[in-house]
Length: 485
Ligand code: GLU
Image (cartoon, protein in one colour):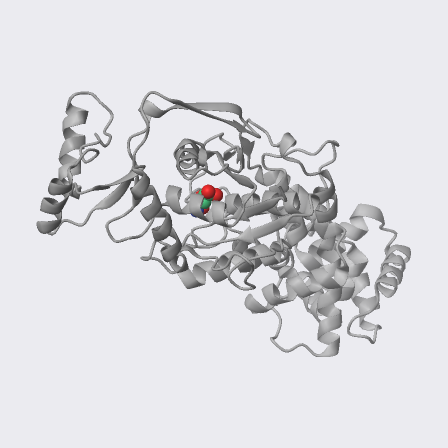
C-alpha cells in the first residue's frame, strides 16, 4: 500500500510547535518513502476564526520548508480537504452504520445527561453514558421526535472485548471495550465528532499511516471500532510522545518559558532551517550522534522505528545553540536581510536606506552575525551605534578614571582629527591606535580597553577596529570630547 500520511489540524489558531512536529514527521515519512503528504482541516468548530487559522497553518509550514501534495490550496484527488465540505460524505456513512445497527439515535438532552453523570459521581462512579437509548423501540423514537427532540448518533460499543493494536511507538496497546461508553459520532446539529470524521477522512483519503500526538492514543480504540464496523482495514498508527517543558511538565499554551508558535519564531528572525532541525529531534532520534541535520539529511535518516517512547523535552537552550549554529553559518546577506526590518521597527535606521546606509548596516550586522541566535537580537546588541551619548557600564567608567586614560584618549583624539573620512577603515583605525601606542607608550589593555570604554561604554565587545570604523569619526570625536572635558 503506498504511503499516504496526513496532518489534520483544527485551524483554530497559529501553527503550534507540536503541530509542526506532527506535520514534519508526516512530511519526512512521505518523502522518504516516495509517498504523499496530505493536509486536511478539521474545521467543524464553527465558532472560531477558521479562514485565518487555515492560512496561518499553511504559512507556518511553508516557512519551515515543509511542502504538501494535497490540501485546500492546491486541491488533489481526494478533495475537498476540509470537513465542513464533506458533510454529505459523513451522512452516507452514518446511514450505512445506522442500517447495520452499529449506530443508534440518542434523544437524551444535555440536562438529562448532566443529571445522570451527577448521580454516577455521587455513587463514586466515573461519569459515563449509560446506554439509555441503546434499545429504543420505533414507537419510543417517534414519541421523542414528536416532543421536538433532535437526536445525536452514538456508536454501539461491543461489550467485553479487548481492543488491541500495534503502535509504531508504543508497541502493542490494549483497551477494554467495557471502559468505553457508547460515544457520539454525530451531534444533533448534524456535525460529526472528531473520532468519526477523522476515520471517514482517513479511510476515504486512503491514509496508510496516522502519526499524531500521544494525547490521541485513547481515541484510537474508538476509531478502530468504526473501521471494523465498516469492514475496512485501519491505517498504521504512531503516537509520538508528549512534549514537556524543562520542568518535565506538560507545556501549556500559556507557558512563557517556551516560544510555542512557529510564527513567533519567524517574527523574531530565527532561521527556519534551525527550527526545523530542532523540531525534528523532539521525540525522534537519528541513527548518528550529531545534532545538526539539513532537511535532506532528515529525510534520508527518518523512520518510525526511531520515534521515542519517553517524552521529549523542549530545551530552549539547545534550540538557541542550534539556532546560533545556523546563524553563524548562514550567508551574510541573508542575515542582513533578516535583521534590517528589526532595526527599522526599533526606529534605529530609516525605512529607506541609500546605498551607503545599506553598506553600513550590512557591515554592522555582519560584525554581530556570529553572536546572533535570531535576527531581532541585533537591536539589543548594537545600541551604542545609535545613541548620541555613551551609557557607561560600571567597570568601563572605572577604567576611565585610571591615571593613564587622559593621555591615551588625548592622543587618540589628536590623531583622529587628522583623519578625513567619516568612516575610516578598520585598517586605518589600527594605524591610529599604533600611533597612540608609539606616542604614549601605553599598549594592550591600557590602550585598547580605555579607548573601547570611552567610545562604547563597555570593556568588551566585537572587534575594536571594526567597531570604531562603524561608529564613525563624528561620534568618536564627540564621545572623546565628552570624556576628556
Ligand atoms: N485535529 C486533531 C488534532 O489537531 C487531529 C488528530 C489526528 O491526527 O487524528 O489534534
